[in-house]
Amino acid sequence: MGWLQSLISPLKKMWIRLHSAQKKSRGIYILYEDVKSCPYEDVHVLWSILVESNPPSLPSKQ
Image (cartoon, rainbow, N blue to C red):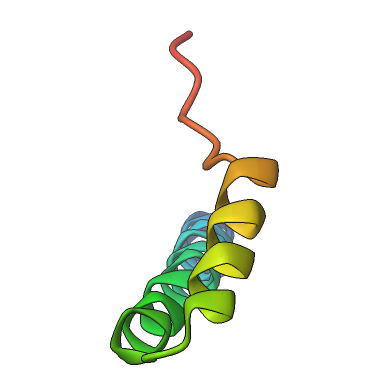
């Protein structure tokens, strides 16, 4: 039974890391919907500054 645990444990850790990374990256898109619906010009300007200063990271090809 120990060999089964040694096989499942790394897979479980990898699944948790991938799943939590998706939640973090999804947050900015939820905020985008709120910004898009806001009628104030200042909010849109601040959003464009934020997006330009933090470009999304692309997965590296190895």
